Structures are given as C-alpha cells and as structure tokens.
Amino acid sequence: MNKNELIASVSEVTSLSKADAGRAVDAVLENITGALKSGDDVRLVGFGTFSVANRAASEGRNPQTGEKINIPASKQPKFKAGKGLKDAIN
Image: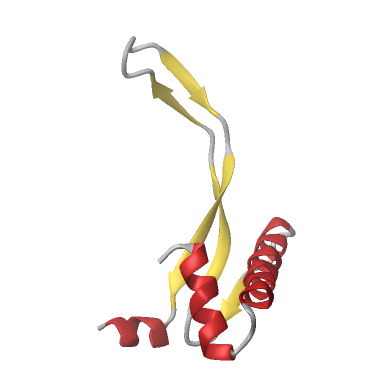
C-alpha cells in the first residue's frame, strides 16, 4: 500500500473527502516526524513505538577501490511493532 492508497482507504472508512483524509494522514506523519526530531518517542498502544537510535561513527571501505572511508555518526529512525499489531498479523 502506498500513501495514495492509504489516503483512499482512510477516506472510505471515515467518510472524509480524499482531500481531508490526505491532510489528516499528512498531519499524523508530520507530528511523528516532529516528535522524533525533538528526541521524543511516539508510542501508539497496540500498534508500536517509533524511536530514534544513535549510530556511532565507523570506518568502512569503498567496495570498488578498497579505500578506507569514514562513516559519520548519524541518527536512525526505528519502529518496534506492538503486541496488537503482531497478533493481528499472525
């Protein structure tokens, strides 16, 4: 399912117009992104938890030349599925 399909599905389930459903989906995604940027976790009970993990700097190799390269430290978004989501899938 892509974003347009998600918006269409939300529109059908909630009886909102596609434009309103699109704004609602965008608002949810923007709020999750904003919370992660500020260092907060987003916990949706029964669905899962969005969080940020710090990845330490490391040294890698260029696969074409074998030359050593430095990989800078970075922050990575993470998602851990909750029990409700796991149970719904299995």
